[in-house]
Length: 195
Image 1: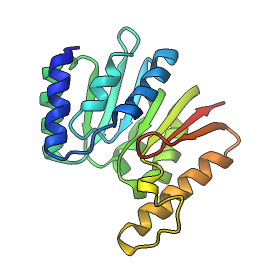
Image 2 (image 1 turned 90 degrees about the horizontal axis):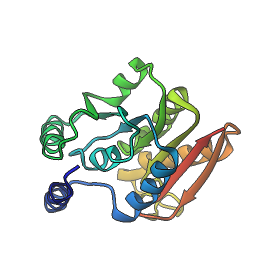
Image 3 (image 1 turned 180 degrees about the horizontal axis):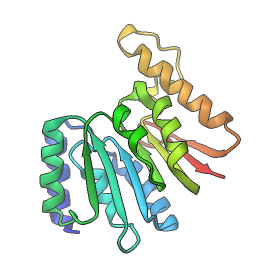
């Protein structure tokens, strides 16, 4: 992977105000990927491909990342970025709505990374549980959502997202199949290992 090109992709995304994975979040996930050496990763929410490119470095030989993005412009940028970083053989983009694409996927994944519409996290979790391997890890970014999730936040605009993130946290915390940690890195990172 070309590190200089990766840095350029990151800087452009920041300049264009495209939400990409924060450095401290990436650091935590990288450690998990080094330990698990995943063969297959599923990413829900590609944006411009930055996180998928970063994750691709830790795949086993012939490993693959499937990533889903519904925004046409971002898919186009992600494809260009993946090509620039010379990792097209490792990353496959599904273009469309994850709510429609996920139920049609029947593969097993060692890692599932959720970083898309906050209001859909409980649905994404259901799908992730179905597709995660035994011992697989489900990672969800932005679960504390600017601190709103743990506070008494109730503004109309974000209410659904906050409610669904709370539901997600309750589900991963109470599910006996999962061993979950929630870290206050970035905007909140939930790491759930499938027992």
